Image (cartoon, rainbow, N blue to C red; front, side, top):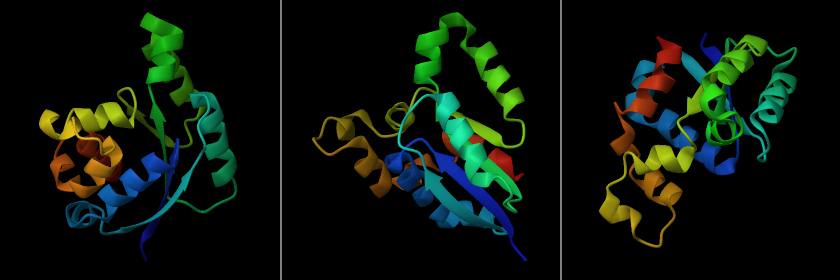
Length: 149
C-alpha cells in the first residue's frame, strides 16, 4: 500500500507547478511509494496559509503533509529576523513540513530558466511547466525530495 502525502500551496500556479514536478518520471522514481493529493490556498499571509493547511488535514490519514510557503512576505515584514520567525512557525506547525520558497515561485523559476527565455511575453510559470526537466537536481528539487528520503 502506498503512503499518502498532502501538498498545500499558496495558489493555483504553485499547485500546477508542483504537480508537474511530482508527475515527472524522475520524481516518481524517487517517490514511488507515495500518492499525492494537492490543494491550494488563494493567497494570504503565511500564517493564514499554514492555518488553512492545518484545518484541511485535521482528522485525515496522511502520512506526510507539506505546506509550500513564499518567503517574500516574511522577509519584508520581519527583515533580518525573518529566519527566527520561520523557526517559530515551524515549531507552531510542527505536525507537518514547510517548504520555504526562497522568495516566491517566480524567484525559484528565474534561478533555473535561462535568461533569454525569461524575456519572452509568455509567463514564467508557463515556461517552467514546459521545461520541468530543467528543475531536476536543482535546489528546489532537492529541498522537495528531501521530504521523501
